[in-house]
Image (tube, rainbow, N blue to C red; front, side, top):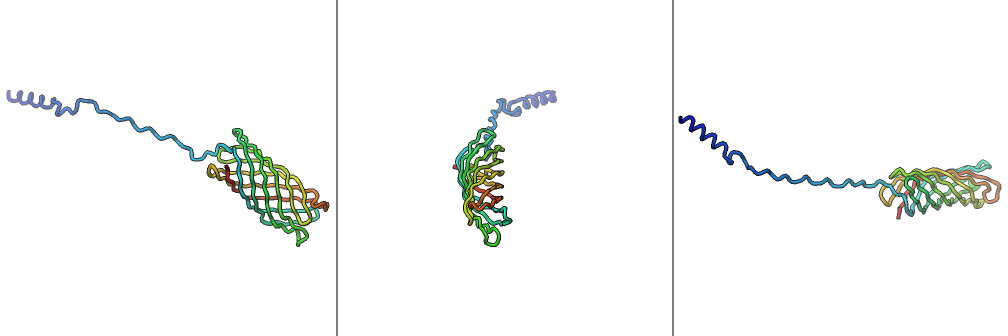
Length: 194
């Protein structure tokens, strides 16, 4: 009998709330919400005015066999409008140089351009074609001609862009001398957008 009483006492002790734990359900706090994902710089909108500078190389060849190349450096200003994936813009730029066209016979001093640009928006990258009117200043006189080329720009921040450009120029009659010239420029560019 003592055995039955002992077993009943143990069963009663084990079924008390002290051993069963807290009978109230625990309150579970909700998990904190994840912060929104922020894309640092998708470069999605190329609309706006900009100014900048460029440095590169100008290589010129004339119809009378003279040629030369030298460093070119200059400034540019323009405006782009982003239509979604298609970007259209206009720009003026000026390059100074000191290209000697064969033993001091003639020099190229500067090139000024009025550009139209059309490109495709890849987010932070803009690839474009360009063309327009160029005026070259040489020691034998000025001449207006045309140019065309390609370029690429990469948006580093919302304001700063870096890129490169290759342009091919054609001038028919330098300073009314009857001499024509072709010039190629390759330049690295940096721009600040407003």
